[in-house]
Length: 532
Length: 44
Image 1: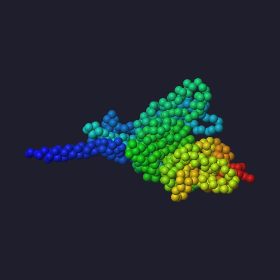
Image 2 (image 1 turned 90 degrees about the vertical axis):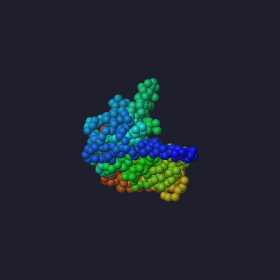
Image 3 (image 1 turned 120 degrees about the vertical axis):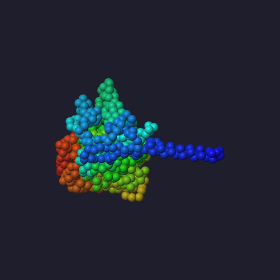
Image 4 (image 1 turned 60 degrees about the horizontal axis):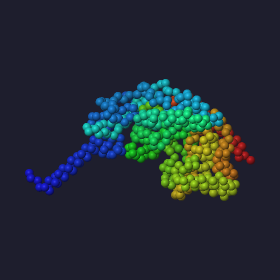
């Protein structure tokens, strides 16, 4: 058949479009990463025959995929063609009987090392400050474990699918009770424990730090280095010291969430402990998620913290106890959601899941526009600008400097600050005998920058309660009979000056007595402790 | 108390309950001391 040149061109063009469409469809079908770009969803082509979660009995797990070449890992690393080739269902059983791996690593804290402990006792402690120095021991028994599996498949041209990940607990029904949240976090073990780049270890940075100390000729400089928080990999901050990990969250045994997350070590001096607090960040570039949403605990955040209890290492009770006791007071408290963490399939300890105080938190809790939220923490703008800090300092200068015996000045202070809330906050902190790291630090206020409708848009400073795990509530330290009013008057010019006001003094004393009979009454506190 | 697995990394169940009891003792003694502290600081 003779084809006219015009028609031939049209046929060629249509054929080309058809072929192109076929190629695109095929690419979409067999290569989701290519089709969806780098932020493709994890595990949308592969599937497991059983959902990640808790199982009473061992079972066989199949991995289903539209091609045969499947690889998987059981150590948290992302699989590739060097990983285990999938040839048939995998036996999933209670792997707790397998040898411990990660809890055997001593490089995670100076308190595992006798020599470092001796240095710590010599330089980091002084007679005035009680600082918990744990006597860490490697567990003698096999600890609880789960199977963490990551799978991937390849098409004939070598294109790789997204990774499918799952955590499987067998015979661990106790974790499904009491509304406890179980968190499984798994990644390439090097991300946490590699000497050079692992974020969880003393590592190279500590080695360099102690080298500097040993070479220091100036004794004063040497003592200064030894007396400060010792540098280590785990003291690294910022994106350089963030690692990607797979996060799976279970509540009452059911899978709530699978997500990629950026993990950083959180905290100040408590970084030296083990387990350490961890900040988890939603990272759009990792899997397209801007938020971590945990409906079961009503938490939607861009970052959250797995909190290790700070310096309250033996009970981890102080922060959640105070948050509970003060929940009806006129200042902000955090929620502490109890959870158990598994790291790379190995039990890693009891934690609290908490949100971070930031403008999003304030917006959600108080219905104030997040761009209008100012948070000043320890005299630094946590949310806001230098201009906001300047305004804060001017307000605090007035409250700490004006003659508070003059009723007009006290009334002005009440217009600058939510005085009822401030009295509640100071009475609560003083009741529990806070000292050492408060009020000089761990002190924060927030306000709306400009006036907004609603109760909390009135531009008055309001208090945020956090980090009450040290310097207070210590029976052994004699905190119960500590004159905290005198202590705080020495270190808080605001409180000290307000005490010159009869109105403030009277209200403050009344509030202390009211807390004594209600929120902090011994019987009530005992019930709260027993409920934690 | 809900927690069932405190023992790990140097924290055992006994130490946990000991700390919990000390916390209760703190609040019992503090209850008696609060009026004294108020009187010492704000009393006429």
